[in-house]
Image (cartoon, rainbow, N blue to C red):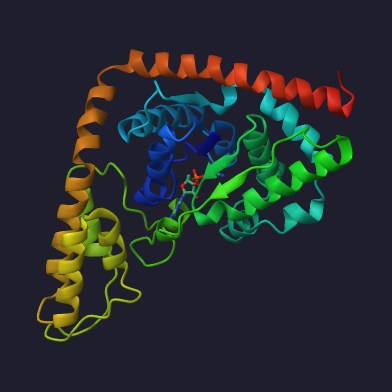
Length: 322
Ligand code: TYM
């Protein structure tokens, strides 16, 4: 089984990225052949400054390695190291109805948030389909916001197979875990860079404390009263970061009443710090060893090119380019 996922280097990673995609990706490293990449072509749709794109790319590489991506077990590479992905995207473009792209939620959402609708943004799902299909991927761990993109991918693969012969492309399955499909942000909406409601995976000193204590939403239930557990963003985040015993204790304290949200927020902060401390240590080591990261990405690029070559050859032959 080939497992593949990508993350955009478009800013600091947040705990939504971690629980939605990185943590499952790290766990799946033992389940099959893992291909994980940094979607730097995709990031160009929003990151316009070249120095910024380079530094976000590097930081993402370090952060994903710190989060447990093991280059011995996984192929880790930059999307741009295999430019054939653009060729496959072009081929897919010719079976993709414009109406399908016009209906893409992420496109409509970006427009609603004031992004100018350039072609890169519009064609984004086709390039993402090419990312997945170029490596004959079977399983794609992602958060729920990518579900529609996976549907488009499956649809385009089906169209190519119908037009040019079954087996031209492998039709992938998304892997979306219910518990982490939509990690809420500090304001209770989906955690997202574009909503400004993120809790960073690697916060600066004091930053997480400030965000949790000052920005995380809670309701106005009186201190003595039991706290409602449904729709509690605080509890939802705690469930992701604390162990079962701690979660059971917090839930019991919610039911009992008499404890204020300030106390629960402190517990969330402690769980956050404990959960990510080992990764923070690893990250500091990686930051001190830039050569290692370069070497990992260079080796990953080789392996990714080798995996993509037979697929693009197969497709070229099928469509009449070879
Ligand atoms: P990106 O960079 O926006 O997000 C990376 C991953 O994080 C997940 N995610 C979340 N999961 C749960 N709750 C949240 N609040 C949350 N926010 C983000 C996303 O679902 C994603 O899995 N289009 C992709 C990048 C991409 C890709 C691919 C992914 C390009 N090509 C091929 C898979 C396969 C994206 O924008 O992810």
